[in-house]
Image 1: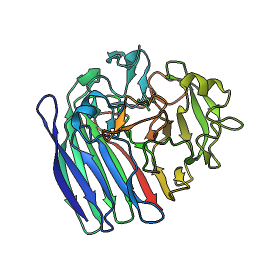
Image 2: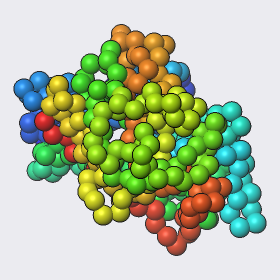
Image 3: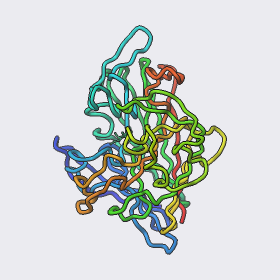
Length: 347
Ligand code: GLA
């Protein structure tokens, strides 16, 4: 195991961006930036041992700062949308930035995806890890509490990436973190992921309003949202289904089965690459890259098409302070927020 460090550039504010490449003994690697905790590349083999990058991103900081739909980043303080960009804890109401119409998306205008994190490195015999730390001050982007956040990326010799999220606060607050990598297991970003097979162990999903905020909970049975048996993402995506039509594809939280593991499996038949995701989280948002288009040029040359990547954003119920059909969840001063999601790549 090894960690290779390299300069990735400087932000508009002149902050140095460093790329940390975690390399295992097989030569397969995960690269992470201190800017936004972005996963910049994941290099894994196909069935013939050919190594390709399987996540969308850029090879320069300017594009990440100015033209990135959350490629690979740590997302928060709250992943997803907060309706009307407001939430209450007890008698106190907090107002967030309205960076997505009338709602807050992914923590606001200058959220964790645009933050410079302090990185420490650990290399052991079978594991290479970077831990990213950031102290988010009280009322940053409108959220209460001085919140100390640690996100660790651990890469090992079985080609498993484990991401752990830890946080503590000095005042009751809300926090719901995820990673926003767009996967395309073919490694060819001129293609879309409609040929990937997906299995999600979820009997229910959350229906969305037109503004993509949570509205209701429905069974997946007999709907295009039933991924309990693996099927291609493209099989039902163009069905005459109201939820698919108003969201222009899948962009929905699935409520995960609490027993079956792994809860999510993504596979690309032609290359033989497979991703198995295991999490202690309640939900996964499956977003099929509905807003991707040619204005995004991955790694500077490949103009993306719609659905060039799929996001599988594990998280707690989105907007649980406002979405009354699910238990609301806050972080209190004497508690620790801790959640772990593992991504196991096989071929
Ligand atoms: C999440 C949301 C999508 C979209 C992407 C970022 O996946 O669910 O609607 O906003 O983030 O582009």
